[in-house]
Length: 140
Image (tube, rainbow, N blue to C red; front, top):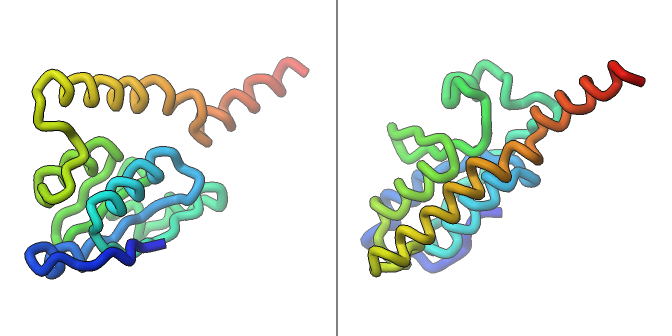
């Protein structure tokens, strides 16, 4: 569901073009949706059903050759990977910052984000779950 926050005249022209290609159960997509809403940025939600294989479509593969979600489109700019999207949003739309100003607190916040993205992600992604299932069924 797209944000219904009041638009800031300084960002409304640019942010009105934001399109988020996302899957509702993806933790990476959740991160970006939460950030967009915390920043009060309106966006168009484009559903990508990864269970049905929508990420392999020709149209989506042109946007994101890795075929993962989420992908953010801002006019001519295409950003994939949730942390890259969060940093892009933070730089482009400094209102309602996601990160603290204090350098040490910012580093700790980024460290936690990178840890979650790097380690936790692979334990629960559809690709890994399917792979583990296929490997386990070989031994049954």
